Image (cartoon, rainbow, N blue to C red; front, side, top):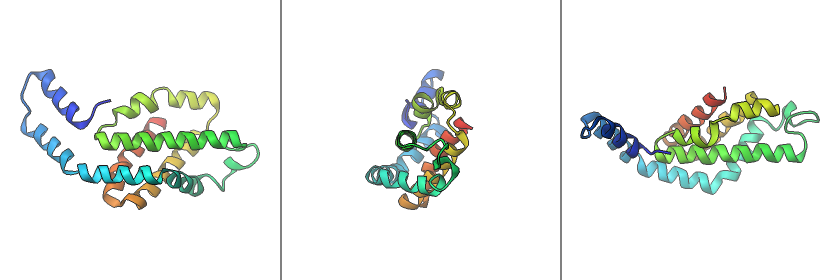
Length: 161
């Protein structure tokens, strides 16, 4: 995993150059939003169970997926879905803090779509739940931090789609 700082420095280092104006501006933007990202991460951590519960209620709870024969039917399957949503929330938060989505590729998306397809997990319903989680999170942390978190939720959805 990289963070925004490491990414900028590595790009300059590969070229054997000092940081240029564009690189400095990227760093300024990252530092400028630092407090916002930390506050959002603290709020998400303190409310993660509520975020997931509300996202499931918003996107999945009253659909065919929770009825007998559905992919979230039985306690074991329901618990696996909740576990996965918790992973997505946690790693999206890590990515937002780092200002870099590479952790999502490394620890979440690498092989996930193929695994879900082989297990018969409905990817469309998973994407709906992640989108609902983005909405619930945005309402909780506010529009500016919600927009930032939305980038990482969208990245996960794109990787699954």
